[in-house]
Length: 320
View: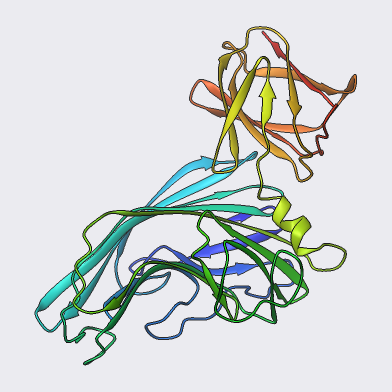
């Protein structure tokens, strides 16, 4: 999947079709290479049972939900078998990636379900290790981990937001949970951990997002700002944000105005209805502004690449 300034490569059949590489124009893979049984690449882990990462054994179904040019989205349902002393188990779930031209990637892990770990911990990745970890993670090749204030982050420290510098690029990572731990480029949100036995059958869900940019001339705080969706007014209503896309539920048969309560510096995606129109005239400050658009059923998904500052207006006029 090549989109924006990066390419994300997924595993091929018959292995899991989850990410195996995230490369920029230099060709360097920004995600950490696989290391047996621990956090690698990007995925879900139940140690010492199994893990769901790209290229490893398991089954997966891939659905291309959005194909661009404004926004792309791919959903992967997966099943990973693992074996413990008492017999076979499995780790299942669904991960959805949404790609934006700005270098932002949103990720949702949902309906994650794990099998059991016996009290001995004797499973695929451990014999007699009675500790378990049930988690979702991103794992990058790391040169330096930073906190939101651009200071070097203490390995293992908790916090929902941070950055990793690698190969002259900066990667901002944001979760919605302060329990995230960062160490050596790996960001781990543990849903459950402790001493075996393990038998948590509650479905798990997590939302995270990353942004990638050349490291020169941008701070961690500024790059993290690209993962914030400030209130956006579309016509007379506040649009809700879902995974980086603003959703407007109003049908617009005539011109409407878009304004932001705070700066949106890296472009914005808006899904709306033009009352049946498939084309529109878009202006900002009275002059034409660049945009891309794609159909989503009977609705339109716009990508506005230019920044939108408080006091500025984007005017969209449906053309019938």
